[in-house]
Image (tube, rainbow, N blue to C red; front, top):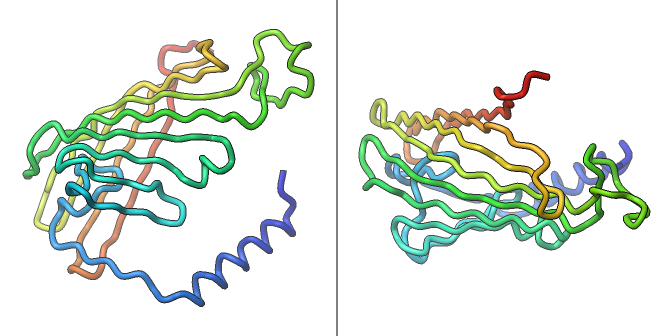
Length: 195
């Protein structure tokens, strides 16, 4: 677990790098340019990457692949696929599929690190698979509302450990081509568990 001092040092480094580099610039011409937590995809051949967001690539105008390069470096591959089912319009629907697996340290069914995996029955490397639809609605010019929900299955090695219903919603408002306000939220629930 990182100490408070390590967290402060990392924060200062990130702030220093951010302030010393030229600022990024983005423009949003219409609602289909908004791809975070929406039903929209990148255009064919288009790449997008951010500091804490995944690297995304538009395979064609309706299919997008994503991966987190930083997670790959720390042996926790994350891959995603989005297929825009309906054409871009006032109401757009997409199907999403993501998978993450951590190959760092084996854990037990409670999520605790295991130092001797031979002495632990049922231990393994944690992973998850998540599938869900997303619906994006252009409620007003410049105002996009998106929501989705679907199951996420958690594993230890290939043994299913848990299932959750993951829901998400977002509101994105394009004030003008240079200014955007986004509000995102998500929640994991287990409505079928009595405990």
